[in-house]
Image (tube, rainbow, N blue to C red; front, top):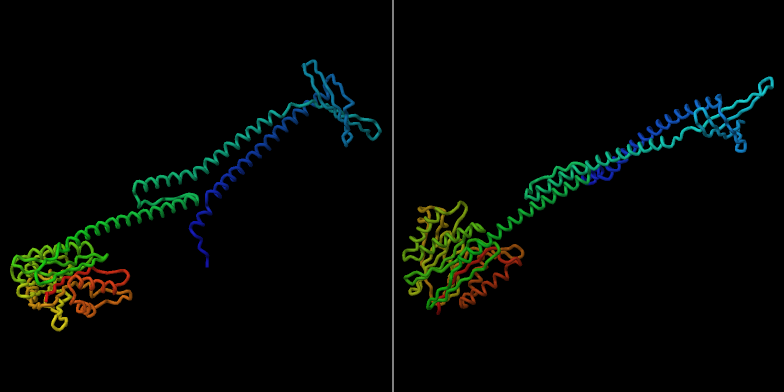
Length: 461
């Protein structure tokens, strides 16, 4: 099985350093090779020409009429027996004078006759200027070739770098979807990949920033809506102790509670559950509260008021959204509460002072907005609940019974009802405080998962 080479290591095998070294070495090797050939050819040509000239001059000197003066004191004998003697000459006919070397060799033939051979070789022309010219030409050729190789190597780097600069300019202009077309040495490719990763990180950061900004605006809007959904105050009724509590959670929604003070002196206690979370649920809750409040303020039958509210909401509700409500219209003079339930899961809780028992009041009804009229009106049931001295009634949304502890266990209806029954004899302020404490102690360290709303009233003894 072949080992896979990481892309970065693979790219570095064709990096700038090996590519530059290879290019320059190849160029210099080529230039040096050409220079050697040029020097060899030039030197051979100069040597051949000078040797021919010297031999021609030697023949002329050896057979011509020249006044020569040898210097026997400087004579040297070659191992071959040839005597090498410097001489000076003067050619008056041509007006030329100079120095040379006499090569003299003596031998005897078969008959013992001596023979002498002499060759006078004048000094030839100085080859230094010619060789200097040749070397200058070779140097110029090397410089030109080296410059060309350097330009070519630089172009291999500059061209992809220019492309990367243009890519960075596009990214700087805000085009975070731009991808680099990195071509060239390994370092250039690595730089291109690094720029692409940086661009992707910037794009993700920008998207996250936009999402956070939208989320912050949603939180701000929903927070404002949630504040607007809370009642402005708690009514004061002689002989009755009213109160409410709203325990917010990070997962804001549209659940709300309210007090409705009617002109005829009766007081409406209202708690609503709104399906969904976030801004849509908050807006639905605000719309439902507006309809409910405006209609329930009117003096009329509770069933007729809920029927009109349902017709209005049915036209505005988006598919999948719902609003459930539990409503108790308290008549302080008669000590009587008229109760209606529109699909609310948590019934009205009534704790009797006479026996301390808790009873649930859960009239029939479907949630607001599901049906445009006939089914809702047929199913809606309204009942009357007496409120004796010392009795307490509690209206709540469904969040308390769905409250989870650290082990993920829900509080449930029975445990919630037991806590209501346990604290019912306290005044309303203390009742709400202790009930909140119990819920906080049960909840997980993360706190409440949903907004919790209570409305309660206790008739004084």
